[in-house]
Length: 216
Image (tube, rainbow, N blue to C red; front, side, top):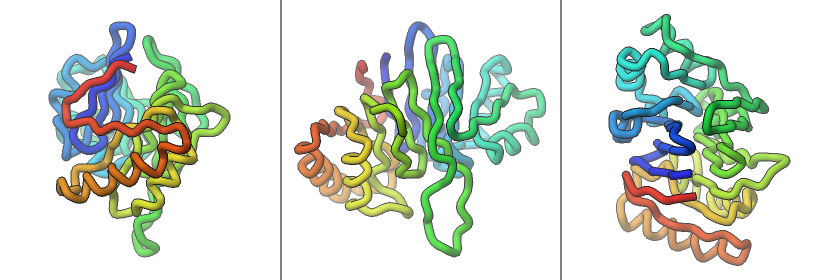
């Protein structure tokens, strides 16, 4: 399976001739990520994970492509494009697609502040390999992910929580997501600490630049 990281939390996965795009948000190269895609999965409705204008424009041009997401995303898409192929993605589900098996976890966005209402967020494990938590520190239960996409910086997290999350998931390979608000100095600091402090737990952390690909 081929993984391509785009800016922030958008990831493109290719397997057996099929393409799945996760979280094509407003900070990402949405058109490039979605080009030729067969499926879209969105973890939650926040615009840095779901660029509604560009995703809906893509779905208008590609009406055969299904979108899987929590209800708030489905409501927004259906309002603008009633004929879109949308399917609710709740936690603790298994979704079988050609080339991909999706298992969902969690259900709630991490707390930003007590004054900010929480929303639905669904983490997704793809092919028992790649875990994208969206905006949460949900640890998938009943299975150990092989590859973790770790949100290394956000208004709702701090570095110690990122490190504890990476250790808890215990995936052998970790790549960063949710990093577009970081300047280079801040990114280097966080990545160095995550690399050094999780290595004793069997974790290998590796940086990916936007549009860089790896084979899993």
